[in-house]
Amino acid sequence: MEGKLYVLSGPSGAGKGTVCKQLLAQNPDIVLSVSMTTRQPREGEIDGISYFFTDKQTFLSIKEQNGFLECAQHFDNHYGTPKAFVEQNLQQGKDVLLEIEPVGALQVKEKMPQSVLIFLNVPSKEVLLERLKGRGSETEETIKKRMAKAEVELGQIGLYDHVVVNDLVDNAVRQIESIMGRK
Ligand code: 5GP
Image (cartoon, rainbow, N blue to C red):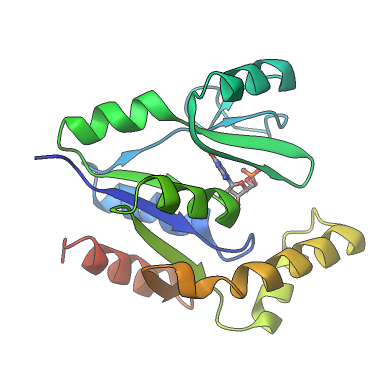
């Protein structure tokens, strides 16, 4: 039997990365898709584990050859899900998880309607603003841009199969496990 494809998405600042990490630690059989990106590696990130880091030309040529299940530009960088890896693992009956931004998540739903889209939301816009400010790495300008993007993303929440509010990471992970039929 084919595995299921789960897509964890939501605004930047919702805590997708943290939730995803804990979910995978508790469920090591879930296969995480490693994305390709044109952004520069951050300290501690490892090529092939955090992302496949590449240049814009290579990225666009893979896109041209239909090598991505979905791809999107997030602010100044390109991100994409390598298609073959996802397809192979699903065929082997494994559950595959994508942790991606909303433009890509909606592309996945269109291409694979059987995929399960989970929107990880913040408890409120105030909390989102606090989280973005708390990162310390964002300028006033980028915080404004991220808040504006989040507004658009929240307007599309009805297109998702499930909404999980990330008030506490443990709660959010438990809800996602339940959606995945694991608890
Ligand atoms: P970051 O640069 O902070 O690692 O990621 C920025 C955003 O890109 C996050 O919202 C992350 O979920 C999203 N992202 C990571 N990989 C992919 C991908 O393959 N496709 C899409 N559409 N978004 C991605």
